[in-house]
Image (cartoon, rainbow, N blue to C red; front, top):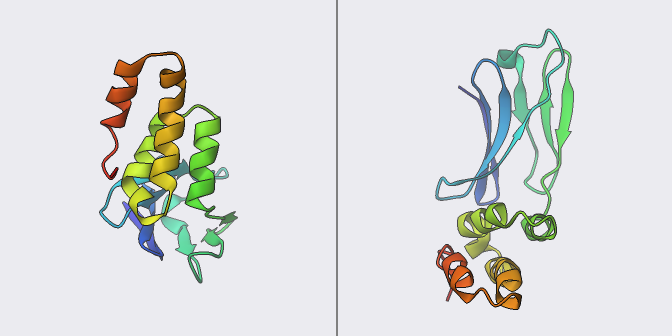
Length: 139
């Protein structure tokens, strides 16, 4: 069940609940999911009482309920991609580059180079080529 929607520039944030858990999900302008985070709930809170609000894409989002007030700050996607790469979470970084990378200058290329780097350095060129084929918007 969708509890709330909010535009984030060319992306979209959705507050979704399945009755047991609530998550804040971020979608690209083409509808691809590129990040999701579970919303912490205190005991006795109801998912149906949550509300999502924000004034502008660069300002924090607020999630309110009868007993909760949470603040979500959307970080720069390039900064987030670099964090994923530093943590060796290459699959997530590639998914991010494919979903929103074409709208952010340099993001796709940075993710590509950093994702291929370990395999190229080890001489595993076949695996590097397989990784390269996963990128949608490379020129």
